[in-house]
Length: 245
Image 1 (cartoon, helix red, strand yellow):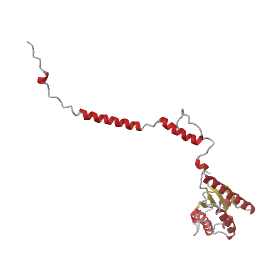
Image 2: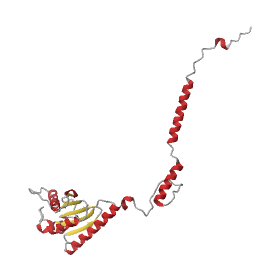
Image 3: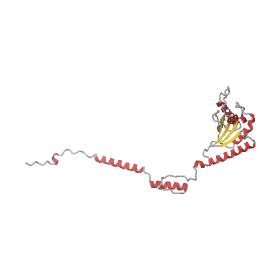
Image 4: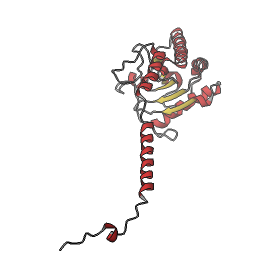
């Protein structure tokens, strides 16, 4: 007995509504397009970048960039960084050189080599004055005999605008009295005395600073009286502003 073929249109199941697929596909397409745009915008045009870098390098050095190497601009070996070539640094160095020359002349003409020494350092021009020219031992009041020398230093300091650091030092012999409980106080008081003298002669106070190091930055070991005398000093440092000069 032949089975009757079931007609599809007689017993087909209820058709699922698939109308949502069209807007869903549209959303996916839009998202894909958005990602493509974002990705494309994040990629640097290598050829355009090379062109820009080549122009920049040519302006600096007059040479072409080697495309086989990384894209970078390097200064020629015979040129220094801009900050080391600055006009301010050159001007400052010239002023400090002139100051140093005048100081050397003053010291030589007045036979002060035994009590004043000079150093041209990275910090600046350092003038070291031994205790004997400024103070009585254990005291912080300037001797009147020191005034002419300090006046010359003041006038020379006025020829530049650099900041000034005034730094007191002692030997390692302990001091303890009502005025100076330790060498910290003595060295600080001596530096302040010089600072006040400079200020009284017209050096702007905002140019100056002081510090007392006590016995902790000696020039020599405190093993002889001569070394101790050298360690008891006040340093006047005309500070370098442009460290690269």
